[in-house]
Length: 198
Picture 1 (cartoon, rainbow, N blue to C red):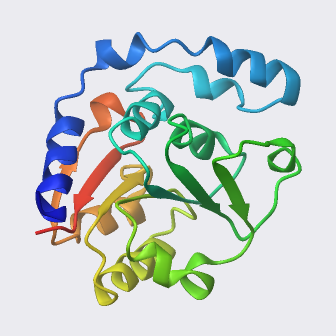
Picture 2: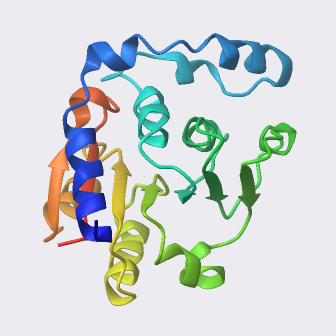
């Protein structure tokens, strides 16, 4: 099976996920982790359609032996969710370090505090899945999107907060690749996936 067919298959699987399926995911192990470390923070436990962490946990199970990228670490919740499947490795990037994040120790999760576009574009462009949740001003998102295009990225890009403000709406509306609004199983402020494999 070609890489493009595999990615289309993953997108089809994402599009078939139901809210009920996500809300039934057992998060008790993460509650224990939160009690010990203070992370993931309380919104991690929200239902699908309110928060997107259950969706990321489910997406992690659709890959095996892959390196997934989380851009915009903040307090580490998205990275923790994406690292749910320990057969994958997650690289999480942020330009600012949060003290909470330094407490997180998972063997399949690595935090970097720099701009991935400047330091690791070679690995990023070959990733099957990238989550982008950064400044929400449209400018960095556009820069990131065009860098992926210019470097021949063929994976899946998940965008958070696509309806948060006018800048993010304009960014989402301007994407020319095949895209899907999956906010009903993602974040209340909007979640979308973009298919670069076509």
